[in-house]
Image (cartoon, rainbow over all chains, first blue to last red; front, side, top):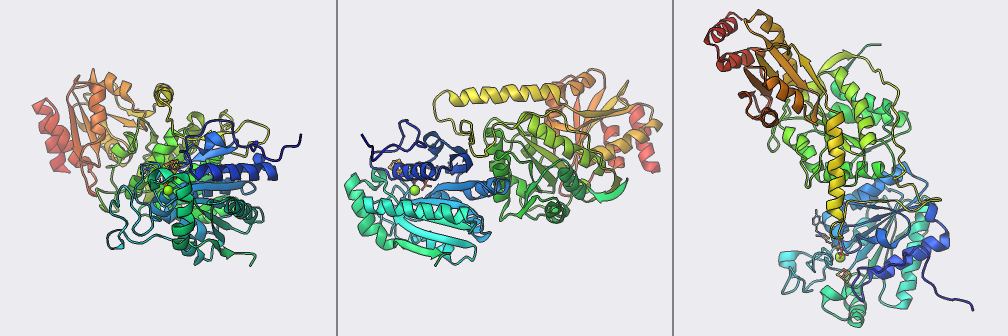
Length: 246
Length: 363
Ligand SMILES: Cc1ncc(C[n+]2csc(CCOP(=O)(O)OP(=O)(O)O)c2C)c(N)n1
Ligand code: SF4
Ligand SMILES: [Mg+2]
């Protein structure tokens, strides 16, 4: 019997702590698939963020490093400078990357560090029970914007890809989502392009992935996916924002 | 061959000679000679030099390079060290070896750029969150700066622990003749825990998060055991003129240099002044200070602070003899005359006090 779909070898056979319908698990799986298919376990080093994905090192069977909240770009820089021939990637949430770690990501892009960033934008602080993130949509209700995000008090959603695109040091920036099988396939392609940007020494790459947090969006899994397509994707347009090949 | 160097430059060159190939810094006076020196020397030896966007980024780059198995270092001065404290706690929690040079300046806040010893608390008491210790080495000359930087890297690797060199503006910017004499490296443990890509082995994980109940307590017990071992084996101090001393001065770094002068001058006094100069501030030379406290009339701690190390002196003495304090803050440096006057104030014998005061007036 020929199997057509399997658990990637790099994905450790263990229960995850993600909530039902969460997007983190999908992204984790895609990373594992790529490491399997490319056969790069031996030369890959990953960074876990502080956020719901903190336990990534319990799920991926590769060398991994934790970093303080927001600091993965600096820690990844330190690792990559020791091992310039390894594939180094950092996995970050929107609070981690776009709030507390904003300085680190901007300067890491600006130094054109040859590292791949996987930026999971779920427009919320999942780990700390659903507060506003820098990417929270206007009028979106969160634990700290109970009547919706009003720009007068809370500012506007930050579009990270567009922000980094103005820096000469960034090479590949794309926004994708995990809202449908088709979009998941596109996300995998984007991740592969990110890794290839690094293996071909083209510099800084970041893939922003719109991802559901059904728990703190107060929606079921299907509604969450619809919310990504109908609301989130208009505030954060999908597509390639910057590409060294084009 | 003797060279004339500042303490900052000596620290940088010693780090290079100790095999440090990853340096991350952010400019701040009075440590600028160090970062400037590194920007020239690191490329010459094929190492990495990054002027980071902040002290926070710099210490986290150190974290990354240490996790990847490299010898990494950062340097700064007091306000920058405050920013690094989060990273230092994570380094301690992930058991990563590295060296942090702190060329202290006055505080609190922006303070000033002159010499100070007001970072004793944040260096020795942890500074960041959690039950951890940084090994803290305090040089009192340019020569000792270089010697201790070599040792700092070895200690860091031996115990998988961050090591801080605690200097001050005086030690950092003073020029003195010195010589580099790196001894051959002792047998240090292999870094089989480092992140290199998991070729032919199980994955390695560097982390400090222990969410499963009981695991963190177990990990902390392991850390405490390690700290106990460090305290048993690594205490260093210099003792001058302590046999049959009537009074003992306790001071480190720049303050200790001045106290050495007082000890020299004291040959003219009618009673004997000794000095204990802690070289490791953590682990603290508790035993020798306790031993001295049973033999002397009193102890005087001298610092360029409002009184920080004196707390550890008192904890060591546990009431066996009076412990006095003389300190200057905000760029003030104690003079030997000020210290002698203070001694006159605290010696129990009036006759001795009188002669001491006369001595200070003659000067
Ligand atoms: C210095 C610091 N501040 C705050 C926290 C608490 N904290 C943990 S995760 C988090 C936000 C996570 O949000 P995000 O990065 O969007 O990740 P998500 O959980 O949504 O995937 C915060 C504020 C922390 N661990 N450290
Ligand atoms: S809180 Fe949200 S982001 Fe976190 S695991 Fe649950 S669904 Fe996922
Ligand atoms: Mg989030």
